Every structure is written in C-alpha cells, then in structure tokens.
Amino acid sequence: MGGEVSYKRCPQSPTEMSKKPSSPKWKLWVTVCGLAVTLVLFFTFLALYIEERTECESRCYNHTSSAEDKMTGSDALRAQLAAVNQSLENTAQHWNSCKEEVQHLRKNTSVLEGTIEAKEEAYKRLQDKKNLLQNQLSQLNNSLENYKQQGNEKDKTIQRLKDQLNTRQTSSGMVLFPSFLIPSLLLFIAPGVLCSLL
View 1 (cartoon, rainbow, N blue to C red):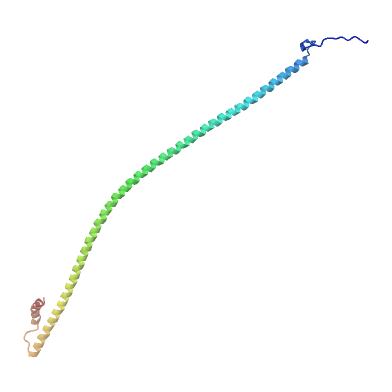
View 2 (view 1 turned 120 degrees about the horizontal axis):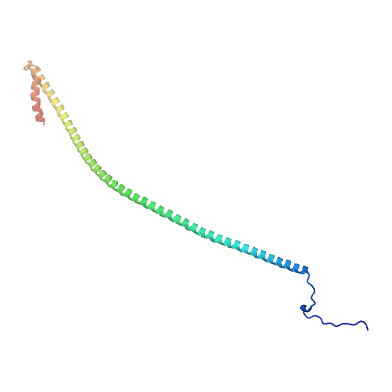
C-alpha cells in the first residue's frame, strides 16, 4: 500500500489551535478600527449635542421672544389703558367746563330775558304815550281847524260890519265918526261877537 496516513485529532476550539506568533499588522488594524469607531461615535455624539443645543437655544429664544411679545403686548395694553384714562379725564374736564359755561349762559339768558321784558314794557309804555300824543295832536288839529273856521267867520263878520257901516255913512251923506274911530270900535265889537259865537 502507499504511505502511511496519520489520524490526528482536529482541534475543537480556537484555543486548541496552535498558537502562532501574532503579527503587528493585526494589532495595528484593530487599533485603527477602534480609533475610527471611537472618532465616528465622538463626532456623531458631538453633532447630536450641537443640534440639540441649537434646538434648545431656539426654543429658549422663542420662549423668551414670546414672553417679550407678551410683555410688549401687555405694555401696549397698559399704554392704551393709560391713554383711554387720560382721554376720559380730559373729557370729564371738558364736560365740567361745558356745564359751567351752560350755567353761565343760562344766567345770561335769564338776565337778557329780564332786560327784554323790561324793554318790551318800556316799548308798550312808549306806544301808549305815542297813541296818547297822536290823539292829543289830532284833537289840537281839530281845535286849530275850529279856531281857523271861527277866525274866518269873525273876519267875515267884521267885513260885513264894515260894509254895513260904510253903506250907512254913504247913504246918510255925512260922516258921523272920523275914520280913526272905526278900527277902535271894531276892536270893542269883535270880542262881543266872538263871545256870542262861542
């Protein structure tokens, strides 16, 4: 037969394998891989940390800005409330001044009404006096007309008496009285005639 075959037992575990001297390349690769994994994990965690911090800062900023907005809104409301209060105070002052002015105007109106009533009464009195004077004037005008008529009648009577005297003198043919006595005679006769007419 051919050569002899040796039947050796196969190793059951790696520890039973024959130990060969370890090479430095394998250790280097393990170290590099470990370092690479560590760096990857470090940068991953660093990126996550930075992202989380940025989100946290943005949330804090949003929260702060919303708080500031709320404070700004409340400040704006306070300012509006203060403006409304000031406007109400101004309106109240204006209302009080208007009330005082209305009271003053009412007093002036009552004084003016009293003055108007007094002037109306004075006007009525003047109208009554005017009517009375007009009545007196019309009576005086009537009296004047009567006196004129009486004067005309007296003039006519005097003229008639003169004419009668002249006719008597001319009919008798002699002058009984001198011419200067005729006017004095008429002066004595005229009042008697006037009294008889009245």
